[in-house]
Image (cartoon, rainbow, N blue to C red; front, top):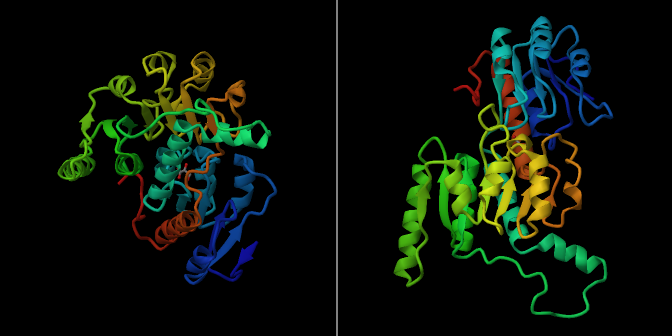
Amino acid sequence: EVWNPSGRYRVISTKSMPGTRWIRLLTDQDCRVEICTQNKTILSVEDIVSLIGEKCDGVIGQLTEDWGEALFSALRKAGGRAFSNMAVGYNNVDVNAATKYGVAVGNTPGVLTETTAELAASLSVAAARRIVEADQFMRAGLYDGWLPHLFVGNLLKGQTVGVIGAGRIGSTYARMMIEGFKMNLVYYDLYQATRLEKFVTAYGQFLKSNGEQPVTWKRAATVEDVLREADVISLHPVLDKTTYHLINKERLAIMKKEAILVNASRGPVIDEAALVEHLKVNPMFRVGLDVFEDEPYMKPGLADQKNAIVVPHIASASKWTREGMATLASLNVLGAIKGYPIWSDPNR
Ligand code: DGY
């Protein structure tokens, strides 16, 4: 699909993206926009090299693509100096290779913060209250009357929410769980989440002044401290060498037997095979997963576990956010083509 065929700058989007604002933004600035319509969910390096062709000024790519040496050298050869991931995470992008070939790289932070935090919160509540299991039970025609012990789950109020990675999304998720469910907070991050701490303190004082039990917060010294203390744990780190398999067999073992683990960051942060084994022997332990180690696949056995809720990497999937991501990715590419420093350069 081609927009503004006579445009001076050739910009490729490797996928069709929601909305039309991003297309207008580019075509109004003299770009010819080519949207790949290949009937294939994941494009290979070879597919993208052939899309880039002999002349290409910039590319908007997706987190499912491997943006390394091969693609950045092809883009540079085609005269391109602009690339943006349509994602905040950029573990699929070799920024050093981009730098080596003089290609500016952007990502899409900010516009997906609330949407992603809302999904992590939804998975937390759904796991605590066993909503998916209960839905399946109803649809299977198994409900034959109210019972005192039917789908008894966990009350979140007064429990402790654990956040590993208290950046934009982790902090927003924490606020949702604290304000929405009056949970206490324990978090782990290399940096102090000052604003989050201030929020919990102020909210605790507000509750106290209303005669309610105040919420508390604690910055943990280690990941293990969070795992031991929290009832609901949500993972929000970036994926890199230090966070690969951050949650492994040993760390699963120190979590509470009835804990809830949520992951809407990147799949490889959890050793998924170890998680499946843990779920099998700990039926009261529950997980809500938006991401998987080898997407689009799940490790054998995961889908059979009633104590797991699994959704297909949809944390940022709200209309407003996806249109915002497309717009921001386009702005990144446009800016770099026109010679401005990329607005959301992940290295800045
Ligand atoms: C991201 O942006 O990194 C998400 O995984 C997809 O929105």
